[in-house]
Image (cartoon, rainbow, N blue to C red; front, side):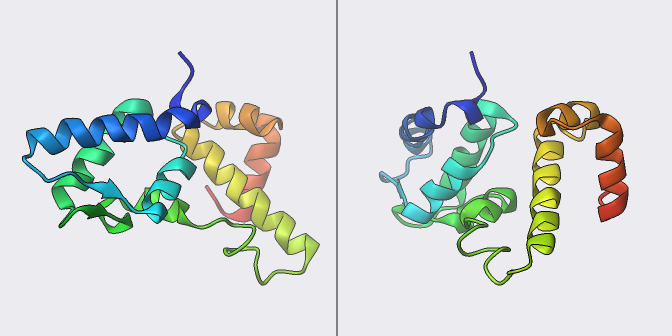
Length: 144
């Protein structure tokens, strides 16, 4: 079965299932996600796969007050995915192609390393660059 990040259409279904499952076991009234929370969960790459999503929803239900679960119920790494970098985030004020290129490379390297749990060889494959080129970029950008 492919990882959850490759099946984003399954995320809302799984969220609904986990909300029902843990809501019942925790004795909570039915809880729904805000649109911001759902968008952040859809953007997150889920390195821990379905189990990480399950833990995230359970944690969110425990921390949630009321019937709406917002971003403050989730771990920081998920909240960091709440904005789109191209429209409202780090590229919004940048008109320099050189600086934007560097910011994009940094972000892609960071994501690849997160997705591979720090494995540089696998990250280089995801980035479609040589391992040596990745090591050079890590040193150049001070990401070591």
